[in-house]
Length: 211
Ligand SMILES: [Zn+2]
Image (cartoon, rainbow, N blue to C red; front, side, top):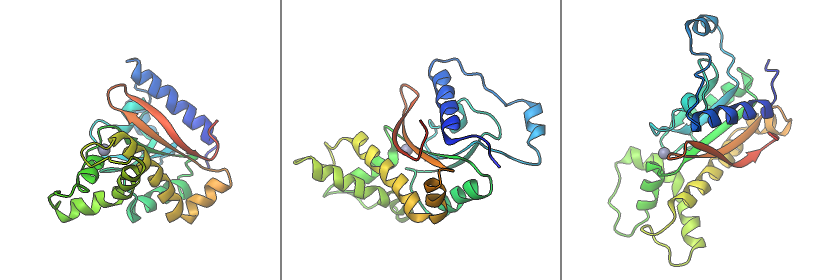
């Protein structure tokens, strides 16, 4: 059973991110001793569901170590059955008190979803389209909110933030197990946007208590 609170875990992750941003990472818990210690059991402190983007390397940007994060990633951090199943495993079996959902600026999946709404958009390969289609509602909302905006002029970062909120809402809607854990205060969810140039993870939506 985890004895740490969602707030403890998120505070530690923010501290790790600050070290990474400052160029002073400690690379904690990455030695042979830690590897041996974990050989037969893991006790990660958080689950992280983020975009697959190669620049969003979870343990590096939060200066975490082996066995610290239970990581699920796909292009554009799009909710699916396999994502929900993995997150439920992290909550119900590994007892993580925190789920971090991580989007980012300059996201290729968000860009592809935006571009797909242009009148002259070429069709995407079917499986890529299936992956980015769930981002399109966020694109449409931002286009509707800004009169005259088009696929060429819309603010991709605003779309990314909307999609991040959709992702958090989608996890809660898809999983009774997780929404109950949140309602009982055992788990919190933080949706954060990672800024590629600065290396900062900026929280945007919080469900539960991480203060
Ligand atoms: Zn991305």
